[in-house]
Image: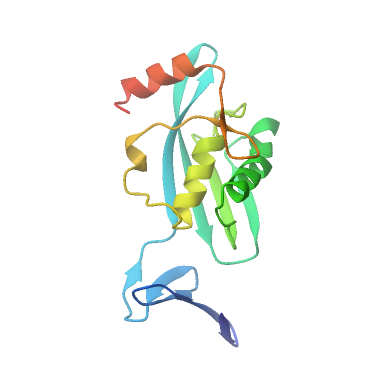
Length: 170
């Protein structure tokens, strides 16, 4: 539920252990300790020419108006992933994000193409909203296209991406 006073808005969220308080974009427990922001970082790869290049997908989820903002030079297919990912997550039984979700595709100076970033974006959204544990996701490079029902599809350039991930130890 939302509680507000002039100039200040707070959201009380009940969890099994205690109540969390969102205040000014920072999470605080009712005991006054701060928790880290809802940020997930996923490693992935893309193909540039014939080479695989490492990418980082950062997903930040915060209270606010329900919208998704994607930055980092996404092409049309990557921008369309917002709809594919949302439908795939909903049809797989996950809840949609209820606030503002910012997706950063890094490095920002390289144009991201194709649908191979669907799966890392989806996993980032789930980790940023605490629907899956995010402890070990940074150990892997994640690539995959999602169908609207949540199933995986093959992606072009898997071999150079796998070689790039292997060179990074993922």
